[in-house]
Length: 178
Image (cartoon, rainbow, N blue to C red; front, side):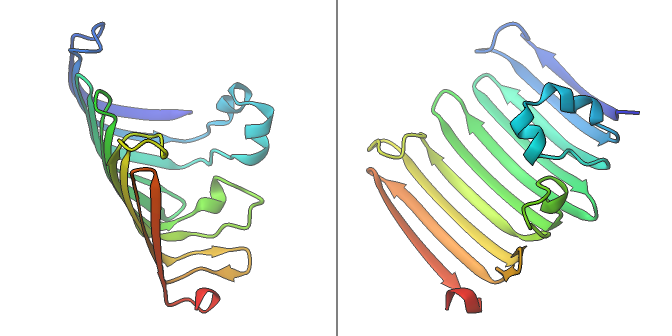
């Protein structure tokens, strides 16, 4: 079995992106996804692995240019929960993500990654960081994470981009950054 997908919802105006409305509640479980690898480029296949046992439950919606999702994904004893909103018309976005023992090493093998516990929050509009119209605010709280032999626990960072200027602050109780 490749995957099991269960859901319910509705779609209105599926051929009209400006007026598309959709809501869905999904419960998906992926098992052996080896059939996906031939679709990936050789470089991606060398770096990324799609492990078995991925589960995702959530609510997803589209209202014209606005997309939103509230979900929890699980794999290998860890999870990633999120609340994500994107407005395509205004290029505005907001995401709140929480990882709990998320086994990054199962997705990016041979990189020395270990499970991640932490939070990421980002909001803003625009993607051109040099544009005076782009505004981004982001915060990261790494509670537990290791990269190779480096312990990167207890690091928080905040950044903002406004008028083409980037401001960042790091607060660390980690010996590597003290």
